[in-house]
Image (cartoon, rainbow, N blue to C red; front, side, top):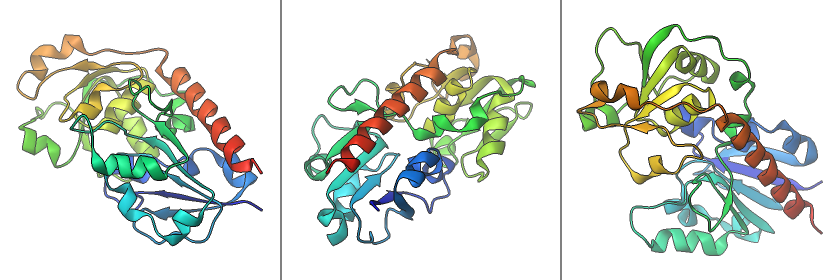
Amino acid sequence: MTRVIFKHIRASANLGDTWCSPYDHLPGLSERWTTSVHDLKEPTPPCDAVIYGGGKIMGGLAETFGPHDLAARHRIAWGVSTVQKFPWSPRYARAYRQLTLVGTRDWDDRRFAFAPCATCMASDFDAPTPPEHEVVAYLHHWRAPKMGLTIPDDIPVQDNRYGDFSQTIAFIASGETVVTNSYHGTYWALLLGRKVLCIPFSNKFHSFRVAPGYAKPSNWRQKLALARASDEMLALCRAATEDFATQVTDLVDRV
């Protein structure tokens, strides 16, 4: 039976990194193939294909390829970020040359197939409970203080080190408006249909399938009215994920 290895930053304190692998959200793949999941830094076992991602791993991906990665028939990136700080990156280019198929989570990068983070397939997004708070904040734990982003005591706050996925989605859903400087916090809040005010710290925040509202750490309280919701984000991302899954299975199953 075809053996497929999934690799991503699994040993991480960042919940978005921990849960972004399609291995965890598309059980049909494990039924189709013999599969296992590994942290990106672990050696890759012998296999027919390796699926990397999601997450922002492209910059260092080429350095993680071992002999079994290179011997596999296919190396596939799924739900990875393909935007980088500079217009051209030698590190990204080295990884692209070794990959059979690239699925980007960045909607505006038309070089590759659109493959949003596979967490959109989680059942937690199907029927979120009604909001309990006008505003909640979901923060990147060390970026927030570095940016000078502060939240008043009367607003519920959680950061991205909290390890329970379902409880985190429930927390985000508890806010009518979600203020966040987390990539996955922005993404999950949009999937939930909540109004989102994103406080970005890099260009990766400007490539969502549907854009949130944006503000700065210094003025977000004055910009809450700019928060944007989407009633189509979940369906769009799930359809794109299913389309990319078909591309992947067709490629891996091809003799």
